Amino acid sequence: MIIRLAQSKDAETVAELHRTEIATGFLSSLPQRFLVRFYKELITSDSSFCVVAEEQGGVVGFASGSTNPSSFSRSLLLHSFFFAVRVLLPQMLNPLRLKRMFESLLYPQKMKEGPKAELFSIAVGKEFQGKGAAPAMLHEFAKEMKRRGVSRFKLAVGRDLKRAIAFYEKSGFQLLSEVKVHGNAVSLVYVYDIS
Image (tube, rainbow, N blue to C red):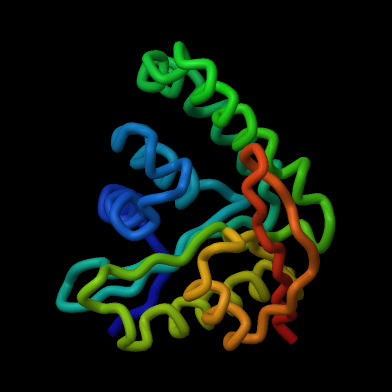
């Protein structure tokens, strides 16, 4: 298995993995075209990056994050505003969906506690789960954060995602606090110390 930094050409596969393996998340509910654009911006932005696991010539998993989520959000808006409006307009007409979009945009403001840098998500295709891809990607992700001058980063995970919580705790993440991003749904905020 090869673990490497994602390239722009990987955005479509990463978006599809996100949609299938993080099916309950808000981003997964948005059109595929937007998700691909989101990951292209994340992969090419100076303040964010994505690590992928490659097996038999194809991407089978990813770990994405940012050294500065607020900067990444601004960059995404700057480079993709008109595209997002065009693609998301039908969903913006639904008041509940529009509210969730604004909650997602304002998410970095709710996550002020702890370090600025953040792991957004890790996902591995079903047929490759349990084969070491997630720990290997997390290790490479932490190395890239350190290379970018970051010594600690955080993540938020839904309180009901027991399997993900067990993985993060086993990997050395320490519980910091709780946060509500979308309505009353509680997420746990964990911190990882690279050193």
